Each structure stands twice: as structure tokens, then as C-alpha cells.
Figure 1 (cartoon, rainbow, N blue to C red):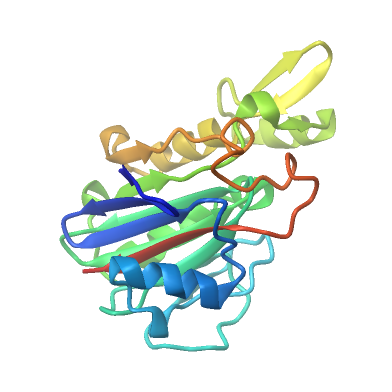
Figure 2: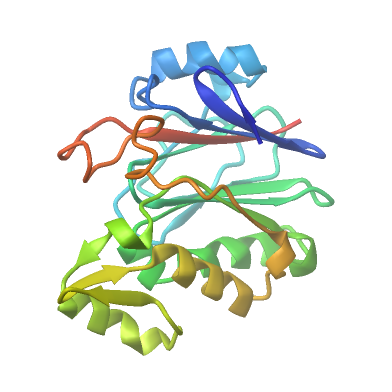
Length: 230
């Protein structure tokens, strides 16, 4: 992954991905598009939905300015970049270079708990005939465990998932590990461990680079994660 002035850029085979840095508020769509043109994204077809911390996934077969509420997007169409917004939640990027299928998921604690990745992969496999062994996943910038203090009730809620080491207790405070949970879920769904690419950015620790809802006192600004087939 290459650091540019305003984004981190990742390219692999026939896909390109950017994670915007904090000098771009991805919610400012016109400014986002202006910056994406520098990396040859088809900005006039940029597709995004209203995110509601759920697990619904929308298949994008054509350019639609009125995408329904969804926290996941999937397409196999050229010239349609997909976009999701985050600012502590986990952005998950899926791609199968052989079948030319791409997807994004917004995984906060709710989307993680309800396993939005399962819904993404079901569409990739059932609709597009992707082979699970050919699917790669990138884990984008998100809040890491050491900075994600949550209630004991939320820790208990996640216990039913039976994931080892999914939280930590320090000085009677509880810290949830969204990264660990998502990686474990992906592996249980059949994603190869060496097909999971972790950017290893924490939105709190790397707050000079990325927006963080918690660190920035409830900011409405967002990181944009964008993927397009090339």
C-alpha cells in the first residue's frame, strides 16, 4: 500500500482501493470525487448507500443515485466504484480478481456481531460463483482494542460467538477487539489467513492521519474507502 498526500492507495491485479486521510472528509462528495480523479476512478459513477449499522448488502448492477439503506455493497461491473464511510468502525474490502467481483462492508460492533461478512460472501459465492479460496479481504483503518472501551454488557453479548481472546480487561475496564472478531469470522467462513491483508492502522493511534468518532469528539467527518475494478 502506497501513501499519497490525501489517501492510501492499494492496487492488486485488477482492482484499486483507496482509504482517505483526514484532509478529505469523504462526506464531502464533490471534494472526494475531485481527489479520486487523480487516481483515475470513474467518479461520475461513484456508488454509496445510507449506512445504518446493519447487515443488509446491496448488489450494484448499475449507477443509482438512490441506493437503499445498506452497510454492504457488491458489484462485478466495470467503471462503478463503491464507497463506504467509517470513523472507528471496521471497513472491510473484498475482492476476487479471477471472477472480477468487488465488495465493501461497514462493520461496526453491530455489523460485526451479526456477521455482515457472511452476507457479503454469500452474494459473491452464490450470485457470482466466486471460489472462497480466491477471495481476498483488506481490513482498513479502525479503532483498535486498546482504545475501544465498551460496557461489560457488550462484552457479554459477544460471548455467544465463542471467539477466543476477543476482549481485554485492564483496571476494571473492558476493551473489545473488533479486528480479532472479524478475522476469526472470516476464517470460519473459509477465507484463507494469508488472503487477509491488515492495514494495521488505528483511528485513535493514527488520528493525525484518519478521522476517529471517539478521538474527535463525535465528529461527523468520515474516512472514505473506495474500490473499483480496473
